[in-house]
Length: 473
Image 1: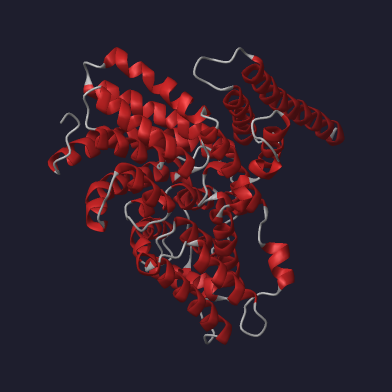
Image 2: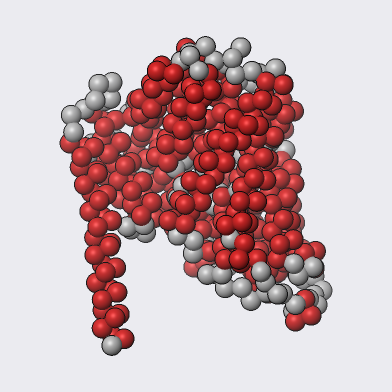
């Protein structure tokens, strides 16, 4: 009987996989073969078809996410969306791909050195064996640690190992709701602390360049309130959704919290992390790309005698799927931009604002919803910002709105959303390690979409007006 049930389950699973793949292929062919819309180049249509296929496969997990990315790059070349394989592999030449490798190496070294376990013990003591308090501590750390570690990717790569150690000490398995709540928060809301700071990574750097010149203080005044509100409201809602998992009876006396003396390898790990963080934090002075300190740390970690990992450990345990996902998503996003597909799609989405031009709030709502849709199709935040901000600002100005407010609005909405694992540069490795699947990520993204838009209208717009940036100038 059991054997028969297993056979039926396998057949059902196989049919479900076929349906997922078939749906993606059908949508791909429809977009590829339909008459080319006015204003869209043939190459742009092909790029849009490939991106649509990738998004469907990423969202449904019809294929492993790294395989989907590689398939997308291959199709860009095969269908003629790019001139050749060199252009198709654009993402593999970008510093951010190797920045990711560097921070993953740092995270692995912190874990292997024992430093993560030591910090985990400190967190357990600080939380007083109260799971709810540990969760609140984590939410606060997203904002506070940004001043020391601006990159959300860096914080995520380090903190995921620390919290995994805490959860292991408490004997909480991956499938438990409390485990998933912590990892969902780390994977989807950690990034909100970074964008509040001008030095907080790729998002604020790209966004500020497109919006105009900002001082560190000016950016913080404008963006900290909406992003911290998204973090606070999202944290409360996530707790409510997973609240049954917080009913844990963790006995501190049942856990051995004795710590051994600090080992030299921990000192080396801490020193490497500290030096790297200082280089990131002082990039305004030396001008080095964030990938450079990350790769310096990686070289030090892998150096004989000085280092913390052997090359064999690095090869086996790094999680190479993360590298392929980010590199291929960069290639897909870049192709959408250079073929004009991104601009055409964005202009099509926001063209409906003309019908509600007499209502500034409705115009902003159309822009916000359009931004959320574009973010669904654009896994790379830099690519999203590069074409959505100019379109939103131009559309707002043409319709009599403050272009800066329209531009900041699409930043607040777009950077608050992670619709699937491949859409979160700073969180891919967290979702993979915690075995959090795309359907769960997507459901939470819908909640955060509503949160981001509500915060935009109820908090950000009135707040920006008080600072001298009203929606209608």
